[in-house]
Image (tube, rainbow, N blue to C red; front, side, top):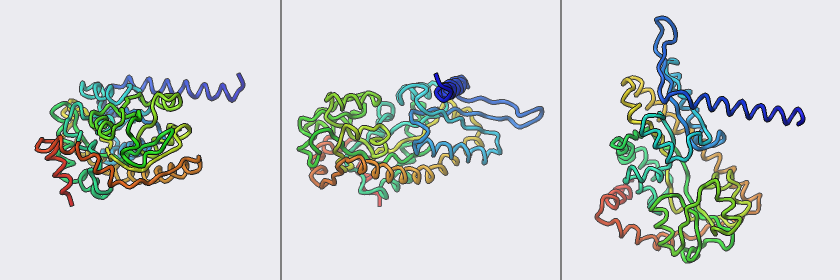
Length: 339
C-alpha cells in the first residue's frame, strides 16, 4: 500500500472512530464547565444525509446559532451519514429518548402523525410561495405540534424541493405514460396511491439499492428532487427527467419529546430560535444546490422535460375525492385556501 492510500485509509478509520465515539454520547448530557461554572448541555442530532447536503448545512448553522445564543452552554452535536440506520429507525431512537434530534421527511412521519400525509397529496401547493406561507403559518405550526402526542416535537421545516419522475426508457409526459411502469417510491401509502392512480406499479426499494434496481430493470423509474438525482448518480442510468413536480414534501427537524421536556424553558427557547433562524440559510443552500444539479444533469446528457401539469392534476383528483369530508381532506382544503 502506498503512502497516499495509507493516508486515506487512516483518515477513514479516524473519522469512523470519531463517529463511533460520538454515538456513545447520550442524547442529552449535562456537565459543569468548571468549579462553580455554568452547566453545559450537549444535544445529539443524527441524520441520514451526507455532509454536502443543504440540510446538513442548515443544521450546522443551527449549531452555531445555538452556541451563540447560549453563550456556549448548549452544544448541538451533528452526526451525518445514517449512523442509526434509516429515518424510521432514527425516529424510534428519538421517541425512546435515546436520540435527541433528527431530520425526517414529512412522509416518514405519516405512520406516527397521520396529518403529515397531507404533504404527499399531489399538486397541493400552487407554488413555492404558497408552500412556505403554509409551513411558516398557523397550519405549519399546528402540524409541528401534532407529533407531541407520539413523542416527536417538531421544531422547523427544511426545504426538500419538489419530486418529479425520472425514467430509464420512455419519459413521463402524461399520466398515461406511467401506466404499466414500475416506479420506485418511498414507504408512504399516499406516494404509492399516487402511482396506482396513474396506472403504475409502486415499488418500494431501499435508497441505497435503487441504482442497481434501475440498472437491472427491476424498476422503470423513480421520483425525487434534482439534488437527490445527482448525488445518487441515478442519472447515469435514468436519462429522462420530467419536471411534473407532483409533490413538495418538506423535511422536518424534530426533537424527542422526552428530551424536550427535560430542558429548561430557557434552553427550549434557544433551541427553537436557533432552529427557526437556520431555515433561511438552509433554503439558500438548497436553491444553490438545485441550480448546480440541473446544470450537472444537462451536462450529463439527461433529457429534461417540462410536461403540462394540467392532465396530471386532473388524473390525481380521485385521491382528493377519497378524502373528501375526512380530516385529511378538510386539512387539504384549508391549505388550498392559504393566500
